[in-house]
Length: 219
Image (tube, rainbow, N blue to C red):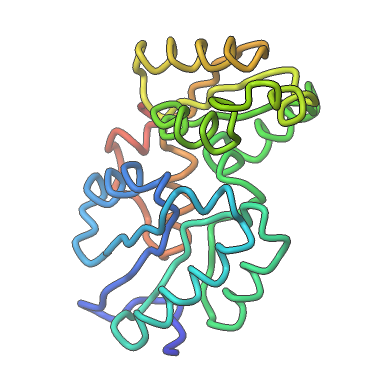
C-alpha cells in the first residue's frame, strides 16, 4: 500500500477512515475548514460493541483505498482493540486519533483523566450515543428483553457523563433520561468540536484557518 508522506502533494487527496459515530462531526469539520481534498469514509458505529473487529475492518478499508490517496488518516482511537489497531496503522504507515477512546480526544486528555480520577465507574455518552442510546446500549446489551442484566452490565458504574458536541437541550434531556434508566448519577460536560478538530487537522497536517467557529471552540 502507498504510505502517506508528511506533506500532501499539491492537488492530492486525503482519506479519513473513521468510526460511524463521528461521521457528522468529521463532515462538519471538513466543511468548516474548506477541505475539498479530504474524503471521509465511515465504518459502522456498531463495531464499538465488538472492538476486536475494528482492526480488520479498518485494514480492509485501507487496502481498498490503495493508490488512490496521498495521505490516509484513521479516525479511531484505540477503542478497545488492545493495540491491534496500532499494529495495523504501523504496518500500513498511517496515523490515528490519539488516546484510548473517542471520549478522550473529544473531552481533551486532561479533562478525560480528571473525570476518571474523580470516578472510575463513569459511563460516557456522546451526541451520537445519546441519539442512538436505545439501539447501541439498551438493545445491544439485551436490556430491553432481559432487564435483570442491568446490574451485571452496569453494576460497576456510578455516574453517566454526557460529553456534548452541540448545545441541544433535547439531547441533554435524553442523556438525563438515559442516566435515570441505568440508575446512574448524571453529569453534563460540553466539549464542542475543538479538541477533535485539533487532533484531525494535526493528523492530516493541516492548520485550521484563524477565527472560524470551531477554532474558537464553539459548539
